[in-house]
Image (cartoon, rainbow, N blue to C red):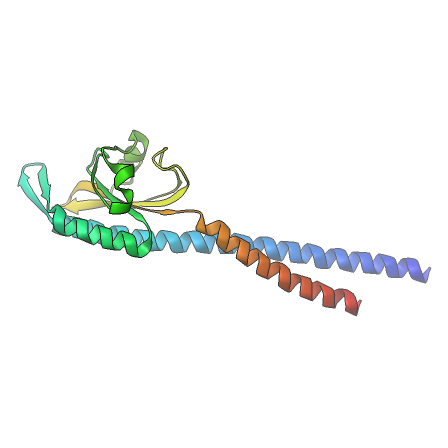
Length: 196
């Protein structure tokens, strides 16, 4: 009788400990993922807004509805920014046609136009930022975090700036996070089972 009560007690306590650690691990992964995506979004959004402001400052209105971008100054800024944050940066007109892009996205963007779906989403947002995790309707071969913001001049949207970063860093971050969790959980579980 004593052995069966001990076995029941041990199995119930062990199950509670394992389920608690599984729930804790799941919550840690959820919050870590949300934190990572939030940080990436903030970084990309801040840089996209800086490029949009610089684009508006380096643009002059030629005639009614037509604008001219001073590409030399803006191109240098885009390339430096792109290299420093490890992202692709490009500027489009309101139809999604690529006008200016960073050196690391030149091959991808040369002569390209964003899909009508992306541009329609931007128009519906009316000046709000665009954020997506994906291939940007097939533009990229792999998943990217992409932020798009409008370039505004004289109260009118004259184009959009997009900043994209690879989404592959999240899996590396979560793998390291999960390894750290498992090692600490294994240590605590070992102590708990020794104490029982």
